[in-house]
Image (cartoon, rainbow, N blue to C red):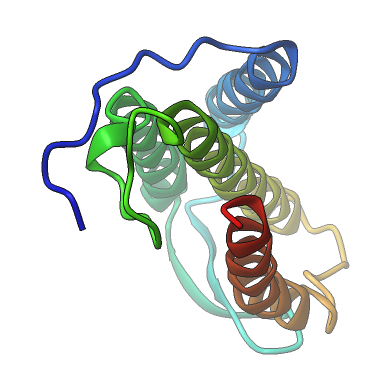
Amino acid sequence: MNNKRPRIKVSFETVDIVIELISITLLILMWCYCIINYFDLPDTIATHFNGTGEPDGYGNKLTIWIIPVIATVIYVGLFILNKYPHMHNYMVNITEENALKNYRFSTRVLRVVNFLCVLLMTYVTYMIVESAFGKQFNLGTWFVPVVIGISVILPIVLIVYMKKMNK
């Protein structure tokens, strides 16, 4: 692969702006939800869930801050990485002719992955807080298979699409 890839600024399209705004909104909502509910939480909350989504590990209510911190670090890290598409990995040699198309695709994929991470962590945070307040529901037996399924299927679909895009 060519190490001297063109450095092109990939402009935001409407869909990119929408994805970023939704991700930021989810992050803000997650933080607000934790802040608003923190003092009402019991001293011990669920910190781990088994394969069927039922709480099976418990810890101090301070642990509620771990997921929003991790979500924020991941969001900021991937947002910054998206500013440097010439550093991403590609299955084709990047040239002046195909750079914009591949960079746009790569940044869009990274943006969607970032959104999915924030969405997942927001949902888990919500479920932890709600279970701490005694709500009798769990993540469900569908949760883990869906997350694993998306994690396996999404890269396969993206690889196939990228190969077709670069024919």
